[in-house]
Length: 294
Ligand SMILES: Cc1cc2nc3c(=O)[nH]c(=O)nc-3n(C[C@H](O)[C@H](O)[C@H](O)COP(=O)(O)O)c2cc1C
Image 1 (cartoon, rainbow, N blue to C red):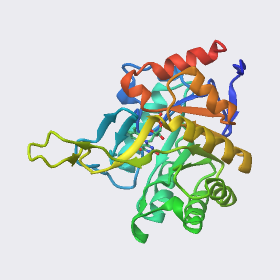
Image 2: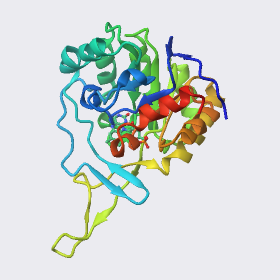
Image 3: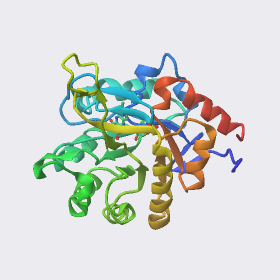
Image 4: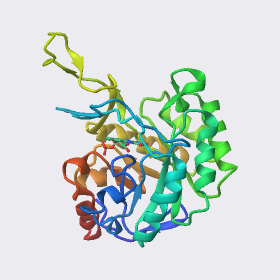
């Protein structure tokens, strides 16, 4: 286990420690600032930002089960104009050491570049994280990441409008993940976030009608924590080996041992998501443990 506690140089800057809040699990920082000292972390990845505001999915949006959590938030967000006017300035005003990555989402190819271009001038933003795990509506219910040509086009369009690092967040379910990552790198990606959630559902039986119904309003969702750890560690190792690019390891992190799993697999940074819901101070504690050489 490594005991190095030097700042991490990656994505054209330094992170004081490798712990970042995973996208969608800490809003835009403001939402958790009463319980988390954000400036003690390596950074925060914002929730997804789309060109237009999105209300998100029908409640309930999260459900716990014995293997972890299911969520179908539906990428609810206030839209890029509100984020530019309100959320990014808040982060710029309140953070001095923690880095900011903005998670970007879209439902048509151009949506990603639209968001990136609109936010590019904000100095506080270190990098854009492209969430290509959502359905590509122009081509049916496929994910942008499932077709390498579409993915390369999407990344190239973002590359055209920013010089900031582009970090591509891939789901573990894509076939030939390392090959997809290579295609993304050739199109201009500077790194990867691995992994996003995996699809799943669970039923509830207390419906009154005797007919079981999905526990999530959307009918299905994404599985996170803790089973995702082994999936994310493998994805990190394979993609880092194949591309040589930096990876943010995400999925199932609850302890400093879990952090070291990702670092051992080649991750530069480690995202903490669901664990922070149950215990908001977990990310800060992990950052402190890492800084002590834990
Ligand atoms: C409630 C919730 C909302 C999420 N929203 C986003 C999002 O907006 N964009 C994204 O790329 N990933 C999103 N994710 C995925 C997380 O960033 C992360 O990849 C995943 O939860 C695995 O990490 P964990 O096991 O530590 O939670 C979300 C996850 C959860 C649980």
